[in-house]
Each structure stands twice: as structure tokens, then as C-alpha cells.
Image (cartoon, rainbow, N blue to C red; front, side, top):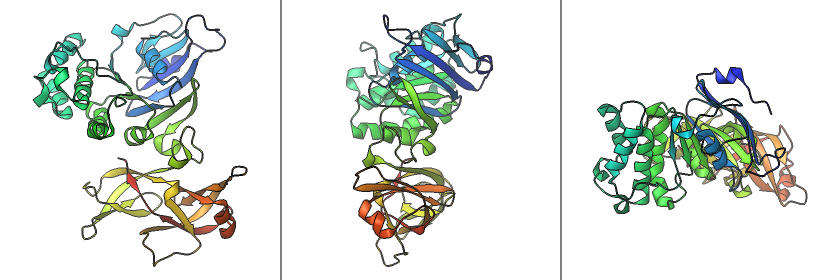
Length: 373
């Protein structure tokens, strides 16, 4: 492994990582974590993978909580580690949000935040403090102690504490893992606002496809301590046979604009580069950029446009690829419409009945669409 990268170290807009890590006593030629990545200095980058894939270890190496035996870490032009230097964790301008809020139990929420302010290398202005409090909507709970707060409230205080350090990089290690589904849904809107509102790059560790699809702009997929896929969330999670995504959850992510509202039927028209779809109106303003997810199991196929059907969204498509595992009863079909793609799961009997081959034209019938952001 090379341990120097001058071009990466001089880049003031990105995060460059090349690391090899193993626990003490492990053979040096067989690192448990061996990654190399250039990460955007803007937006949210998800580190996605199953339990034990190396997600948390990677985050801890970037933070300086673990020392990789080889490699470098460079953040926005500042070298944090290479073969000649290692900046300790307390000298790295990071905010770190763990799975558990880890608040001081003997301090109120506000006193926990004041502790972070004292740790900050930069003076925290009243305006900045109020912006953090306002963004996370925590003013009313500041006088309370951690045991008086719900899990979601404690985690919002933990996020505020990380922001008040005024970090150059925010690291979040499965911050919703300890919450139930309703609490997760409560806190996700706050997480969506962080990167844009504070112009702060975020590395977000998760094994939840739902969270990553909603929050992330870019994703690194880890398995066995190696990056096995990376790219935009749309690209990575719209492929046939996406790594670590169960067959029942295979689908595509589309990004587009809301362009028309049908108040009579409580619908809004979503326009992507491929075409338009009617989706349920969730109150977003017209002109808003949104992200939707369509599961392959919710797409059926027809050789003709079934106008007299309960399915509202029907699109002319062409077959671009077919995945047919050996001895399988189902096939996955990749479909092209405009500049976008869909996936459909059909039985092998239907595949033969429709005589599907690449470039064949037909109609996709979309039974369900989920707005993820």
C-alpha cells in the first residue's frame, strides 16, 4: 500500500483516505480493513454495509480513535495521518455522534452543550448557538436532565453537542440504531438539514437502506473490510443485484422535481429526466427537488398500454438487461425510460410468455412509489 498522496493532501475540498488496519497480533499482510477513497467535502457520504463489515472501524480510524498501521487521512487539505505523523483525536476538528447519546447524566441538556462549547477551538457566537438550537428544535428541553428525555431528544442533544464544537467534519455512527421506528422517523428530518444548513461534510455509518436512501448523496459499500461498490446513492441502489440489498428490496431511486398538483385527487406530478409519475401529495411545494424509490416487486409489465386499469402510472419502456439466475423461478428485468431505469421482478414463466429480449418495447405498470426525500 502507498502511504503518500500529495495531490490528495493538497485538496482543500475533499476527504482522502487510504488505510490498512488490523488488531494487534494480526498478520501484517492480511489487513482486516483495507480501504482507499476520495470523499466529497460536501454533503452526506454514507458508509453502508452489514454488521462486521468494517464501517465503524473506518470511522474510528478517520477520527483517530484507532491508529491504522499504514496509510493516510487528509481532510480539506489538512494531513491528519501518514507514515510520518499522527494527529491525536483531540486535535482533529471533528464532531462524533455515537449510537448512544452518551450525555453526562449529572448535567442538564444545556450544561452538556456548554461542555462542548468549552471544548471548541473557535469562539461560539450567540448567533451560531441559537442556530444550532433552532435547527434541532431543542430549546424547550435544555433545562432537563438526560433521564427526563426521550431517546430521540437525547440524540438531538448529542448532535447539537457535536455541532457546537464547530467541526470541519461530522462523523455519525449509526445514530438512530438505538431508536424505535417512530423515533427514527421523528429525527430523520433534522438529519436531512444538517449538511446544507451548516455547510458541513458528514460521514454517516448505517446498515439501514431506508436511512441511506433518504439522507446520503454518495455511498461507500463495505464488505469484509473492503469497498466493494461506491457512487451516488441513485447509481449504487438502482443496479440489478445491488450488493447487500435483499432481493425483496431491490429497486431504483429516481430524483426529480414536483411540477404539478392535482388537488382533487391529492396527487402531485413528479418529473425526472426519464418521464413523469403521479405520486401522493405530501405537502411539498411545487418546484421542490425530491427523491423517490420504486421497488422491483411493485413493477409489472405488459405488451400493451392497459388504459382500463387501476394502475395510474404506466410508462413506455424498453428492456435493457435481463438477470436470470440458474434454476430460479424469478427474473429481474432492467428497463430504460428516457435517461432513467426501472427494475421489475417477474416469474420466469412470464419472461417466456412475453418473449422478453434486450431492446424490446413494452409498458411498465408501477403499483407503488415511495417518496424518500
